Image 1 (cartoon, rainbow, N blue to C red):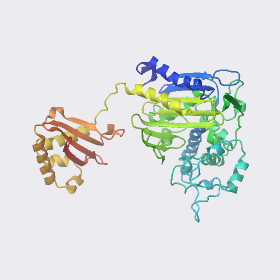
Image 2: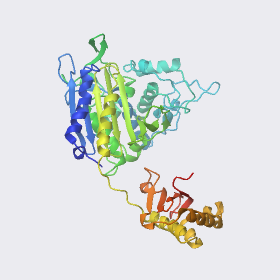
Image 3: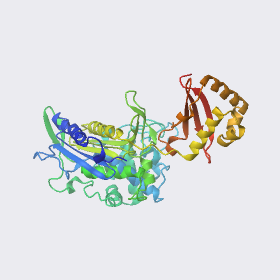
Image 4: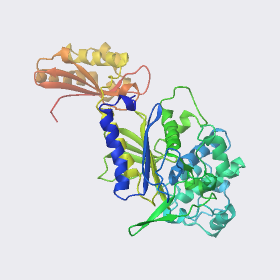
Length: 484
């Protein structure tokens, strides 16, 4: 996988990425902005612009920012730790752990969302950003009082995606009920310390003097400083205070689950980290987005881009702050950024910067995947049937039993004879095998095309292989390229 230092025209690329973030301050999007670019080796490039506080000090490597909803990935990881220890089940209703919640939907037969539904934003609760962002410091008793008073459900749990902070606040209560620790204490002991994230915590008051960035809200042409809220029952939705470098290390560790080098390094297994980064609840894709698929994992958003494949990300917006973390598992290239302005949209420059980096990576020559020998054997058998005439023993060796049952061999023999007549001279030396299941195991050859140049253009055999070993073909269709 490419390292940042190996990308073509690196100096120009670094300058372009840096300019993306410097323009944020120049355009008055935020008083201050700081970013970090990371690859498989860790954080490599960082920079800061503007001011982190009233004294005019630029945001430095150790400046601490609120990262808001990026915290949800820490919450999800903590829930999965407890699951992996056998202390809870994701398919248990949340009311088993938080009995004060009274579900209201569906009418007449209310059902509570499971932990899995809450993790994947399918809990049925309505979107609540402005309200929830002001609840961080409330006590657990005050939270339970809200739950007893009544919580509105927008949809039946498990039926659709809808972003809910309240759902992640409930997960924080689950962590406390199961672990016997406060949410900040559990995350600190079980995630932050094992990963060496020494500049990450929940209490702004504990940040060393001069290191805490001031959050602002714009009023007219002026930036107005906002007070910090302290940790409380809603810390699990957005309470993390950290440096961009620590956030990049966290993101890089999550991303490394797709390329484990030392087994299950760290406090959560590679398997569970990959589970966080796979779509658990689909999200409708806008027609204007350059996406094939989008959804919510556990504490993370997964976007399948037409050019770059899966991108994993999450934004954070809080009074006074905005943050975004984003990476491409295939290359392990990623970017994080923080800004000290209310809901300033840090995802915009991060998405632009990572796009520049992935564009550069895409220009690098990559080795062709090694074709499995079994696939070559299947292709050679297809080629023999086409060029030397039908042979039942050859067909039996490459086809699964359904092929003859779906259409008798005699029909297939007649079809290939007709195709040979239309194709004209076949150029076996130009035969190509093209994987068509991109991103799948075995280099995507679970489905493939056999392409053979011919007098009429090119003969194409489209193949889908079956699920059992040894691998054989379950469907094969033939055509001349360009024909309907």
